[in-house]
Length: 179
Length: 134
Figure (tube, helix red, strand yellow):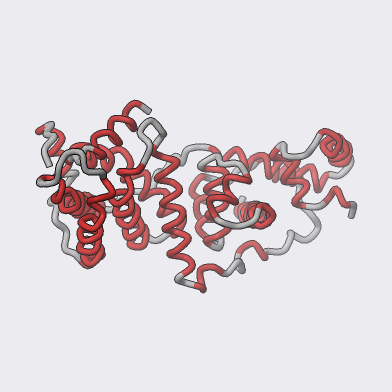
C-alpha cells in the first residue's frame, strides 16, 4: 500500500522513476491476468500494452492512497472484454461446458480423491469459453464476490451465476475424465 | 431426481453460499445420495484448487522487456509538455500531449522490433540511477 502510494505520487509528479516502479511492480501481474483471460501470448502482450497506455492517460486522476491492483485489474478486465467483443466467435458459450454427466453417476471414492494435477486444471480452464473462464478467474483467483464479478464483467448478477455454474460443472466433468 | 440434486445448488452448498435452512436440507439430502455427495466433494476440491497459487506459474515472454521500454518511451513523451508548463497546471491540461504519445505508441503495435537486449534493461538502468528526472 505504501509502495502504491509512492508510485502514484511519483507518477503524478511526472517522475519517470515512478512509472518505472509501476511497471516493475505490476507489469508481470497484468500480463499474467491478461493471459488468463485470453490464453494467447501475443494477445496478452497487446492487452498489457493497452492497459499501461490507459494508465499513462489516467494515473493523474487516480486517488493516491488507494491500492493500485484493483484499479489495474479493472482496466485489464475492461480491455480484455473489449478485445473479446471485437471477436464474436470468442464470445460463444458453447464448448466444454456441454459435456454430459458420466453415465451411471460418479463413484464417490474417485471424486473424493480429487487427484487432478495443477496442469490438468490449467488445461481445463484453458478449454473453457473465454467469458466463463473470465468469471472463474475473477471469482476464484482474484477472490471477488459474485456482485463484484458482475460489476467487473458488466453483466447482471444472474448471468455471472450462470457463467460460474456452467464453468465449474465443465471443469468438474473434464477433470473427472482425467483422473 | 429431487430438486436438491440440482448441480447449481450443489455448487452453492460446496461454496457455502446457501442460507441456513437450505443448507440443512441439502446436508440431509446428501447423506442419502451418494451421487450428490460425490459431486459436493469434487466441487469442494475444485474450489480449493482454484484458490491455490499456481505451482507452475506462466513463463513470461521475452517481449515483455521490450514492451517495458516502449511504455517508458510513451510515458516520457506524455510528460514532455510539463517541462515548460507552470508547475501549478493540472494534469488534465497535458491530456492532448498524452493522447499524441499514446497514439504514437499504439501505432507501434506488436510489430515493433524488440528494443531491449535482455532483462528489464531500461527500467533497471533508470532505477539504479535512482533518478527523478523526466
